[in-house]
Length: 452
Image 1: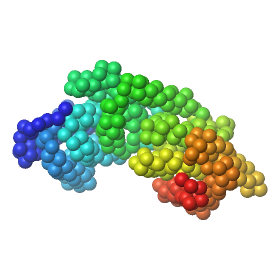
Image 2: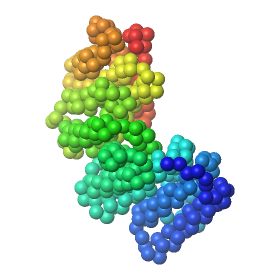
Image 3: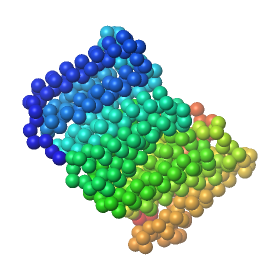
């Protein structure tokens, strides 16, 4: 559904939006001080109000992308200045600064809206549904979590509640299902399935996002998923729903067997779905193998509720290089990139193994850790790869079992040189970059040696 003519010329429309948003912030500031509202409630009321205002953009601006981008820049700069300047906070604050957590969500919000308006290219439905999810889903989840949340789970920034996540799922489902059913030619079954899949996947994104990045990930992810789901049949959508439910169930059931916190486990399930959606079921094997078998290097006696030290950032560190290969393969139609993709996961599995084995063994036994880790990684990752790829893309077994382990060993050596070992005191983000770098290097080392 597209809008033919805007209700107002762009400049008056922009002025109207700025006046409404300014009045909204002023009204909430007065209301908070007079009614002593909870800071989270004030913040989310602004969130909802901004979202409802931006829902009018297709009718106010039609295809005037420059106007929406200009509004996005003005809003982001103003909100950032309000955050950074104590003088501005004293004069105009009181709405966004009452929450103690470190979040840039209010700055990401207008950026996401501007990006959505550009990507939607005049399609009202693919703009409105992600904005509804952004405006209502996240706000309702936060408010329900604060008021009624009792079943908590760990994330990279503390805890979230199961009640809040389920509230997000319900709002996300309705935000997608109702517009698709009423404003498009999408069938009833298709709109129902799309709403369920979007709700589940975006619930995972909301649960694992940090520092307000859900205000970027949710709308942009919703747009990309919605655009890919709309042409699909009931059967195709049913398969995707089944895979999503299976991955969520696996994450919940397997959580106690890992050192990952709950948010990290949900993030791992999300990455597995991404691999399947972009590459096919063969591309799910490596990430599922990594997250389900790395526990071989972390024996059960060392894993209890108090030792869930790995969060979503560790998941991204272990999968970032592989995700890069996945996107390259999808963008360039290169299914042969499955090999460097698999090697990157195998390298991370081997690095985990070396670290853990050296912790368990004495210094003399620890010298064997790299060889043991390479063998285990090779068996768990490369042998399945050999049988998964088609005959035309399959390297010789000798080549795979001799040369690919050299690439993995290169990654281990690089990790040791980079200091990704127990006792490393480098800043955490620097260690992530170093470990991702050696994993990328181990895959690139094989380029030209093993034909891709």
